[in-house]
Length: 317
Image 1: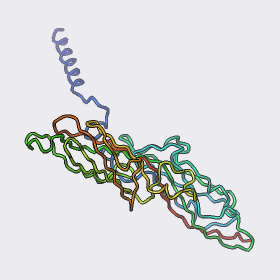
Image 2: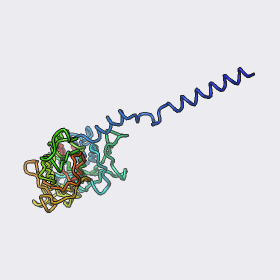
Image 3: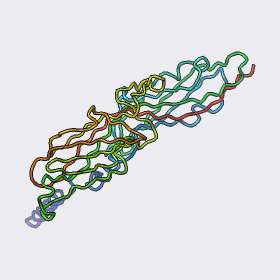
Image 4: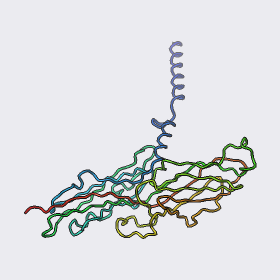
C-alpha cells in the first residue's frame, strides 16, 4: 500500500514539473515565429492593390446583354481601410452605351466593414471582390462595334508608420568613444514599411545637445500620391486640383527629446519625382548617448489604376 502511494506521489510531482516547464505561449506564437511574422508585416511597398477577375468582363460581348466586371481588391499593406477610406471607380466609356452602373464608386470594404491589412495573425492581408454591373448594353443604330478601354481606378487613404532606432549623444564631442554606448549614424530603411509610401533613410547629426534628423520620404509603388484631404470618392473623375498632387502630411516625435522645429513647417512634405525630405531638430535630454525610436507617421491618399480593353458587337437581327 505504501509502495503504491509512493508511486502515485512521484507521478503527480512529475506531471507538475512537466506542466511548469512546458511552453507558456499559444501554439504558433514562439518569439522567433512572432519576430518573423512582424518582419513580414512591417516591411513591403504595397497598399491596396486591385486587379480584374479573369473574363469579367470578357474581351468580346454582344450588345443587348449584361456586362459584369469583377475587381479583386487586396489590402497588402499593414493599415486597415474602412468603407469610407477606399473606393474603386470605372471610367473611360460612354454612359449612353454602357449605362451608369459601372461609373458609380464602390467601397473596397463593402460587405466587410473594414478591409484589414496584414498583421501577425494574417501576414497576407485581406481580399474582397467588387462587382460592377451594366444591366443592358445598347449600341446606337448603325453602330456595329464599340471598343472602349475601361479604366479601373482605386483611390484610398493610407498611413505609413516608421520607427527607426536612432542614436543621440548630447555630449558627442566631449566624451571618448569608450564611454559611449552608441555613435550617431545614419539609418538605412530599405524594403519599405508595409505601405506604398515609405521612409528610405534617416540622416542623423548632432550639434551640441541638438539632434537633427533628415528624413527621406519616397513613393515606392507605381501609383500617385495625393493629399489626405483630396476627394477619394471621385478621384477617377476630373475633380482633382494640382495642389492635391504629391502631398504627404507628416508628424515626427521622439521620446528622448523635445521638438524644436520641423520643415516644411506646414506639416506637408511634397514629393518631387517620387522623393521628398523632412528635417526635424530636437533638444536631447541627459548627458549620455542612448538609442531611441524616432516616431514617424505619414498620412496620404493614394491612387492607382489598371485598364481592360473590351469589344462590343452589334447583336445580329
